[in-house]
Image 1: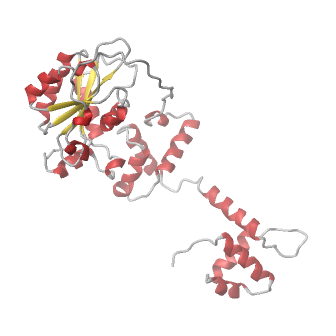
Image 2: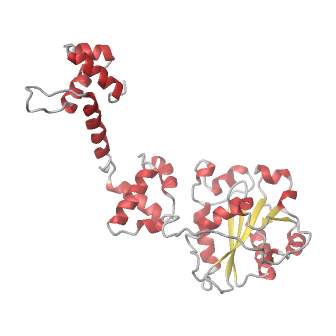
Image 3: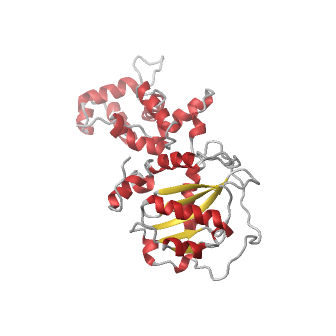
Length: 330
């Protein structure tokens, strides 16, 4: 039988029966508890009154004592230092989130550790002058108010918009429907990254571009699509002008392109989420001029091998393999 502490209602019942003069064994029988449980409860949670010969059992005070003891016990690390070292390695080297780490510890080390415990460990480290918090997704991010003025980006007539996509794209049930965008670095520089994310698996491809132009985007997209070995049936692009050469891309690789509406990032949620994850490796306002494709490939490999909460902590590569579209060696 699993042991659990007395509830507040049981403590009040215990107090009433004790005042009636019943023995601890009789009280245990009435509460359907072990006599040792009742004895331990009275011994540990009774209130000491020096004017009385014996401790006084007050149920409200007893409940406070028990709750305080429980809170204090949580301040103790119940896991070995090796466990926290492994947590710090996944956080710092692999850039996993606390939830992702917690989901895999049972399988990797045979221990259970909640993501909140990991967050507390990180914050404790921060108070002690450590830098673990810098590896959290939002570690150094400052929130800002977002306001939108009139649309200033170039417009292209008769673009196929997102609401004309086939229903199969919305369902996320087949591999081959992608979302795309560019990620910028330092203000005023030309270099950027092209990101493509598959909607049903979360698998991503990232390409480095020397400048954000129609020609550079199309060249990188054609190369990425050809090297991936994956099906590309549709791509839903952001509304930037660098994607206005979509007709040439459609002819080059036999893919159908669509566009999200301006300032509607949720219409390309998979891509927007991935871009946020990618910022852990290529922060905002940091130059991308010296970044090379090998750097992009290393970051993308880590992200494609990272368990995702939305997929039941499967990785994008595992979902891609399970789809049967392609067998990858990792």
